[in-house]
Length: 271
Ligand SMILES: N[C@@H](CCC(=O)N[C@@H](CS)C(=O)NCC(=O)O)C(=O)O
Image (tube, rainbow, N blue to C red):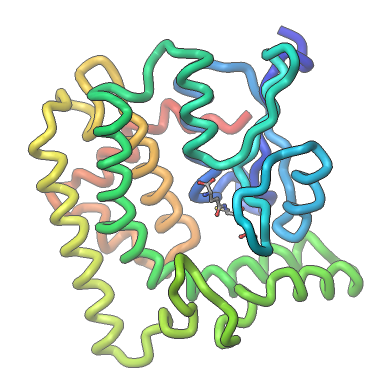
């Protein structure tokens, strides 16, 4: 299949190997890999997301600035090509257009309900540890990409809300990032406890699902979309979360989370 008949996935550029780490874009990559769709990744630096995506006609994902986010895709297999953004919109489109194998075993509604549980029990709890540490990490990454002053300034302006986490305007999912930074060992311990409780609750939820031996939200035939969302979440924590954080949780709940990341490896190729 020629390059023109492939899908382009817009993802965040980084100095990691492989580069992929975006919580949301990795969801799309899992779906593309699982459905064996031909694709290439276009790596976009965080400050260039808006300019790059508006230029290709990707729909904005937010009403207010910053209006654009990754993932976005251009499906050039379709005629005319289809340009989309937002991980859930893209997942629905890929499922409808390329139905086999399905990412929605147990039905879309069930997968979305489990996605909400992952959000409440894991993402929001991890966010208190990842978001406050990511700015430092992003800045280091970006400095190594951008050398000259002009771009560094541009980056600083665009990233104000995350590179200066003490600024009043910094929010994540409606939370002020400065309130997310633990200010005492007691608070730090409470964050860990909240995450461990959340993981415990999610673990109990997965035990209620008839999912076969391998997948937590799928069937004996294959994974479900929530398996991919959980995997991107665990990887996010592992790659850009607090130092030693993954080691602390990987073997909780009977080693379920470490096993899960082993299982998804086959769909983690970065093309
Ligand atoms: N609702 C969107 C959210 C995507 C999102 O927040 N992506 C982040 C990277 S993980 C992003 O591009 N952020 C750019 C920004 O906030 O300026 C989705 O599900 O795709």
